[in-house]
Length: 630
Image (cartoon, rainbow, N blue to C red; front, top):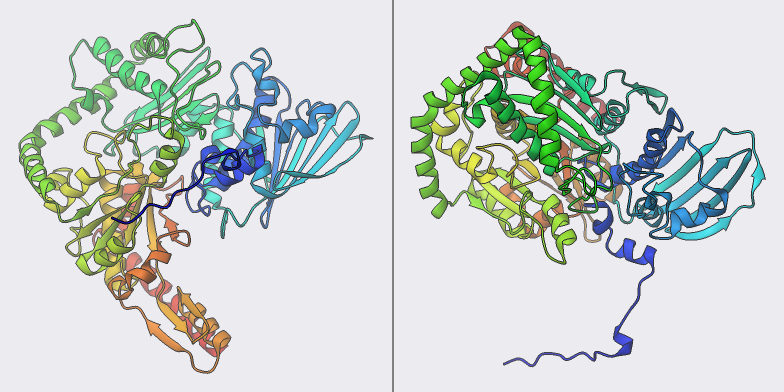
């Protein structure tokens, strides 16, 4: 037996880290996954949010109606017009853990940032961090680099309005190749405004403001032609609800606690879903099936909770059981509100009540029609799962419960959970060998999946491949059990690969649109070319990059065109699905009408679609010809 190397364990083995060292060593414990900005929960959005949350808390307490944010290159500047940090505490507030006014519940009773860590994490994870407080005609500035104080300025007089100005540059060694996606920024800023009606936010001079709160949110997230009745909007003390039913399948929720978007739900969302069923059954005096009531629902919920408890530092899932210490349970608070207000609304609006009833009964008919085929499909899936060669699973899953002393580390890995949907055994073989078995799973398609445009959800059960994919994702009964945070199409970058992507997008948009709307679906970008000489290898993702690499390496370097993912060796593939992974998010613009979109691209051939193909093909050819001429 090999001898195990022994290490001394003594006083010299014990190492103490100061606050900034610990944050930089374990950034995931404080901000979740790092990423490069291609996902809405990547670290750079969390950093910006931690700073803005302080501005929102000031606004909530009645100080400051405007927040100005500017992003230029990789520098973020945030200015609020609240009371401003007390000048004698400017350095402490951004550099000493567990320092802040939010420990005084009277000052910030229903705030998100109660642990005194957020802004310090931004400071520690930034190459440059500068804070200026304006207060009562005076100002004070402090500057930092990676959490280390580099200059503390003296107090000076100022004519600036009260408030705080923060400028920071995220550390590009931690957030490699980061960039901001405008759609994610739009969603983030609109959410702030929906939850704080009347607040005005400016991002690079683009104005965001909401008059009607969650009603505006649902109007932006739905299409007037696709909802079955006008949006119901209910408001009470510390709670606001908006809901409707659509023509789509599934359930779609936007839940918030103290202004924090809880993407993974929590106790408040569970209470709402339960209360909705109970209220509907009591109003119609019928024991409708829960899935028929919630099927195709689109709802937004916001609650204010004193000293909320979240299940991780990133605050994406609420764990609080009560609204405040000694107060009503979350279940009773939301149940009583919905039971009274929704019941009253339906009595006062019989046309909406009738439309809601028809939608529930339509769901009931469709469910009963599918019952037989669903049972057979599930039995087939269970047998297949015992020896499912299509799925190579990973260790950590998105919505598993994290517990124990390492729950923050586990939660971080759960957020990284990814399933690659590949075409054929060749491509899946390379990815399977190269993947991180902790967080990356692989699902292999036989070839091109079925075009399911215009088909009913029966096809999900009748088609064995779709049914196995549905079971692999664990989304048959809703999204609470979604096993992977990132669903990634990993296809060849040729015509057939593009067609497979289109067919997969059709499947998800037709039957599981919320996965796309909530930022779970991506396309893996892999290189088309490898250009190398004896000293250097460059991977190129398009023709332009290939020509630039050829010029750079000179002397006729070796150029390889990857015809498919299966041609990339596992060793090479590992670099494309690890830290340097390039993911293109599949996003829907707010005004997108899903059925019109699918009809245009996947329905019958039309002259307008032919024109679109010809026009865009011409643009692509012009680009290549222009590059070659250069």
